[in-house]
Length: 259
Ligand code: XBP
Ligand code: MG
Image (cartoon, rainbow, N blue to C red; front, side, top):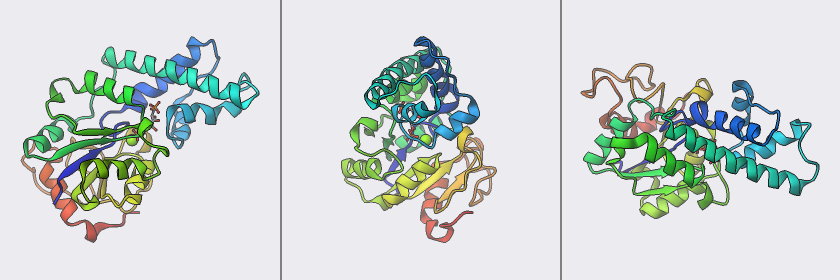
């Protein structure tokens, strides 16, 4: 039986990478007079690197204007990341980033039925707080009991540390939880911590292969297109409901592989 839902943030709660982070990185480059701009395709490649500062560092060798020494590059990445996070919050405050459809409803339903809610992300804590403040709005009623963030761990996803820390804080065994993720790195992190995981596909990971998940589908707003398939209206405005999650979780041994 599931006692707690463990929510990834970027791509799962909201399309933050598409609507926020990429554009905010470009804002940061421009604010420092750098002629760099990450397009959608390049950003998709760079998302294999988790962590915004780490992502900048990974791209610097491709940029002619990058400083020569490791120390200078580290300092530049830090400053660009600081500016990126300010630009990200500005975009949130302007209302540019909404929760993905079906998320608020499932959070409300889970909270009203007594499930414990946690965040497990390797994004910066300030970015998580800003998203909850600006995008959750009225749906903020179901408070998250704990939030494991990037600063809390030594190793970011796909390392399991963030999930292991969440289990420790909640004092729950992995099988009493279900993770909601969108990315291969997130799935790998959950699986390495033995946490059952479902995938709600996001813009940047729309067609990646996923394996060993309890379910995979196009979003929590629809019952169409999920594997295992969802039958019937489900009693929740055509969306994925908590009962669907409980059913998948109960059946997970039967559906452990997806190509
Ligand atoms: C997403 C990430 C983050 C964000 C940017 O992790 O890898 O680095 O892209 O946020 P998750 P920061 O899906 O686990 O939330 O700049 O704060 O790193
Ligand atoms: Mg994610």
